[in-house]
Amino acid sequence: MSVFNGEALLAPTLDSVLSQSYDYLEFIIVDDASTDNTSRILQQYIQRDKRIIVLKNEKNIGLTKSLNIGLKQAKGSFIARIDCGDNWIKEKIERQVKYIQNYPDIVLLGCQAYVSDKKRNKTWRSNLPAKDIDIRHALLNGINPFIHSSVIFRRGNLYDERFYRSQDHELWSRLSFQGKLGNLEECLVLYNVDFFSMSFKNRAEQIYLKKVIYQNYISRINNSKDANLSIPRDKGYFVRSSRLFGRIYSFAFAKSNNVLVRKMIIMCGLILCPRVLATLITYKIETKIGALRYKSKITAY
Image 1 (cartoon, one colour):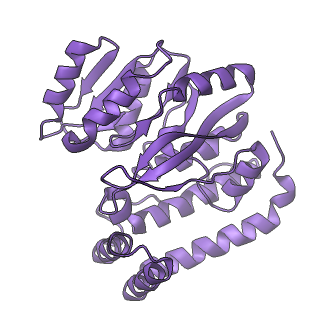
Image 2: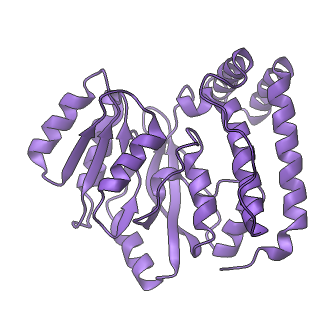
């Protein structure tokens, strides 16, 4: 886990990991130069459980690089990811380890999740594809078929540090060429959604990065190198347009539970941010063409 200023949500996440029925784990936490009480909370937990390993960055370097720091320190055969604010059901790791040991050709295994709000009320249940072939069709359609805090995969894989957002989607697309993929039908994760989180506020950048990820994925299907696309820096892409759309996108989800109202607000945001709209349209066209053109090439691993 990587955490930055997560004091408000940190303790329940730590408790859910440390109370797992599967005992043989090390809990590597990268503190990305937090300025709140995160470090103090982590030190308190270290005194209580020696399975915790805390690595503290001297300066804030972002999620992707922080995760790789933790991955390079890991000694276990499998990696399980969790984000601050999310919780695991007690048997989560045990069930996934048993499954992946029984099916050694699985390289990436997730599960279903209950999505919760800030008060940890369950709002809805995920319905992600479970079978390998269905997951591959989701990737071909540009859909991320895994919840980040649900996955378990084999040690030795790192995130691509060029992708400061959507790094999980990029890794899943690469792992799909190494073996089988799966999602357990059980809900073993309580996934916390904060509509004003960075993932919502930076939706415009995510759209562009997903476009890059998808083009690289199609290139690999054709056994060629990654597409030669530039990857924007945090503050170098869209500038005002990106920030404006991010605020509108977050507002749409935070202020309304009505799907139609949300779509109308988001559409207004897209009209106000034409560059974001153009990127989204081209991305949707590429995924539609890719899904039709390469469907025959997508078979179970």
